[in-house]
Length: 340
Image (cartoon, rainbow, N blue to C red):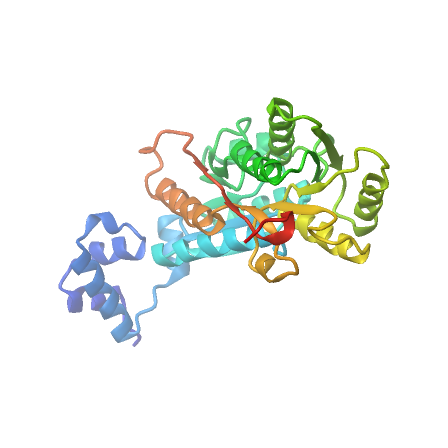
């Protein structure tokens, strides 16, 4: 017969309930030595909990879902990795859902997983299902990953967008750039808190800076190469007051801008500076390397998962909502004309 929970308890010298608490991730009820001993016994005898039986008994599957708009976006890739690492440490399974920025698909994932006794959700929400997600959070914990939506009122992990835009603009100003264009995904017709916050921050920072000759543009455009090429051409064709710097409001926009500008034969940074909001792994490997406002994305994902598991295990202990706001950092490279 395969080993069972009683075998683990007997060999570890603990009660069956202590082993059950270990398997449920409730480590606060035992010492570190007990936890390690149970872990070693489980591994040595090859014990595998009956997940179906446990879920029926506890009405829990020790599983959480992370729903993002695109698994291809480096920002979300790093968020997912951090969340996965914490979930593994806490004994939770992570189910990945790619919503493609589609509100209907986002809601469909939630509706599909709820009857399967999912324990909680990490959601990079489209902000089109606010009422629905708020109601879900009343019985199944939700943590918003990468953005805070006050209208939903759930726990959230996000970045200080005003600070990030400010340091990006200040960096460009310090290098002599006064004519700056911010390229951003649609924000006036599509609700997305980071986009609107970054636009507002850009407008505020540019207005407040007392430098002669300051001009700013906000270019609202889909992440489409042809559309971005058209917008870039229009700006760079201006005879007077031509922009000297482009600021990509997220990593995907910055990547596309870099590609389009290279195809257009624009020399970076000699003819135009380029900076992005979000850093990604190979930005330093491009020619020239791209300056960026970096978010601590891995840590944000890790901490978001930790907050979610804490909410699952202690639903009524933490006051709601818990909002964690992280400070970005500037990574200066050669794409803005820096002397490194």
